[in-house]
Length: 490
Image (cartoon, rainbow, N blue to C red; front, side):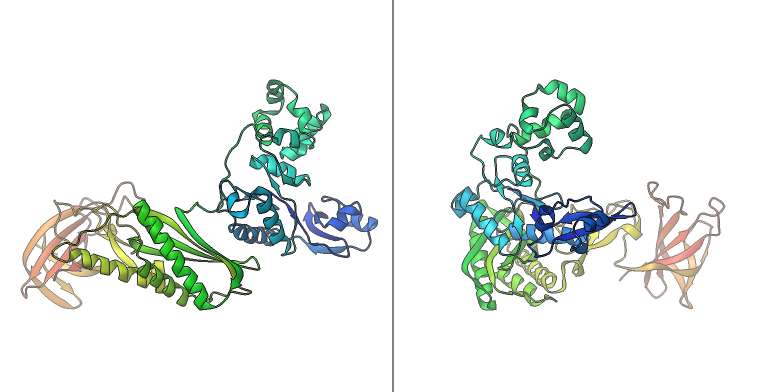
């Protein structure tokens, strides 16, 4: 289904202008302006010479794009497969959805009536391929194309309905090919040799001989549950009750599929066309209605901009954006499974209230560089494969300084462990030392020419243990070697 929109009816012809090569030209016009002979591309001076009484507005492409995005969001109420078509059109894949609205003709009427209530003028066409629907809609046609009759319906249309480059349209017109029917009656090989294979591809798709599915602007959810209301609802209790019923429905769907959800999204469609979406994520796959209901409750309470029902919601939808296999878990005798469930539930609650990117955990990296060995990632992300510590290295401390703190050290031999060192104006005598663990910079990184580091695990006379390293090798690397304390052992 495709349909370009135009400006609402006004008593005075309305034109939108933009500056092109130093001149103001018409970029879009109202139906009244088109009726009196104006057309996009005409200069504003010529337009005013023909029609002195013009309503002129600056063209704002960004605002137009945002408006079209909002219309596309509203069209999700009929199908989750919605794609943008240029700057003034939408394509909806309604395969498998028409029976929910009483058939193709009834669904088309519902779509048009809904959008017309918001002041839009549009042409809507239901056809077997997106290209056929687009060509008919952009040429002002409307209705439902019978199955297999796309070629007959598009044959009288001019060739510019194929959305071809301007030079191709000019070349075809000079050759006497004015309509899509004229083009379809000619052999394809000479046309491809003269104008390229793209011409034949567009022709086949517009005639309904070849179909390519649209690329929706939003990923298709794993499963969906929704509630439609004859009268819009606005009370918070009614909205919460509807959301609870949808969670129960979705839990049954996931259980039948042996899956659990990791990401959920609730969409609230207002009667005036606005759509509000609320998303939650879980640290582990879940289909528990109680925990999911609590997460959505926390998310709604934490919104900086409260959920405004306006004139009410006439559709509430709950979708699973990401699903994973979820088998029944067997509780271990040591209670570890219960602890993991409680930790996951805590992570979900904190993420719902504070935000997903504010609840973090440490992740080990597969690297020998201590500065890169751990990083912070959202706790709700799935855990990556475990990265074992290098077996040939020294044990790493739990507490590390970022950045490492400089010390003054005295070593018995140039490349040996320190005998004593001074840190924070306190002198420490070393009684035990283990090392070195030599770590060079990773050659594939930009700082691969950084000095070599020798790490030592040392213990002073009071029994305190430190993790020290020396930067640089005596007489083998430029610059004098320097000592640092990188961490403390408990």
